[in-house]
Image 1 (cartoon, helix red, strand yellow):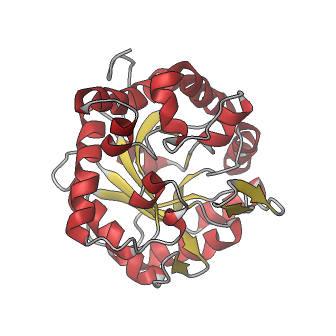
Image 2 (spheres, one colour; image 1 turned 120 degrees about the vertical axis):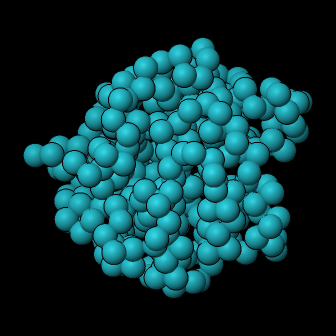
Image 3 (cartoon, one colour; image 1 turned 60 degrees about the vertical axis):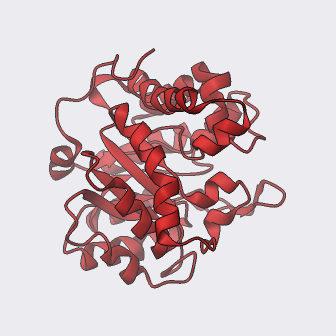
Amino acid sequence: MTAGSAPRPTLPLAEALARETLVLDGGLSNQLEAQGCDLTDDLWSARLLADGPGEIEAAHTAYVRAGARVLITSSYQASFEGFARRGADAASARRLFHRSVALARAAGGPTTWVAGSVGPYGAVLADGSEYRGRYGLSVPELVEFHRPRVEALVEAGPDVLALETVPDIDEAEALLRAVEGCGVPVWLSFTVDGPRTRAGQPLADAFALAAGNDQVLAVGVNCCAPRDVLPAVEEASRVTSGKPVVAYPNSGEGWNPTEGTWSGPATFGSSLAPSWAASGARLIGGCCQVAPAQIAELRVALHS
């Protein structure tokens, strides 16, 4: 399979968002685990780009059947450094980035948009740092890390880049610098705790980075508690003067990065989504522990 070998939507994503609210997929990792995949690896789901690409395409397909109109690629935890530790040279790593887009494109076909996932630096550390931020790196150092990942994904032709699960403003600034001039629109999505980023900064300051930036077609939150979504959507819409908002929380369970386990009650429910849409969300889905069945319910709730 090669990048661009499957048909892609004829309508740009930005134009589609002006017409309707689009349903995103859910957690790729939990669907892969449901298929029997072992993700106990520092590359997480990105390992399967080399070892089990068919499993990734099957997981994407499960979300398409559930009603997802936008698929997020399996490149969240992918990096040239991580692939190198598994023996892949730069050319091989670039092909794996390309494959992440091609697999989503093949699963979705011409009615589904593909978002190339650019996860935070903390995700690549595989130690839960994306829920803290403040890695001790400067903005230029973070730009240097992210730019090769962005370039590799852009070569594969995604419809949008998902700058997602961003824990602090410094990394958001670095990501926006890394994508400058790449020719692909982006969404910028923070992981938050209440009214602040995971690093403790006010969301108004975080969302302000997207205000006036035409490359950012949507801004919002992901991998947060469902209860935090509505106030974040309202704040993002206010700060950016009505720019489309993206929202895809996790199940609401708590994550223990040391043990690699989820605990506590799930609070994600499709009944929450209409209020998010009414407040400005135009891309709505789920993150960790949100499965295809819940995306199917979400689709019904948004389009009934």
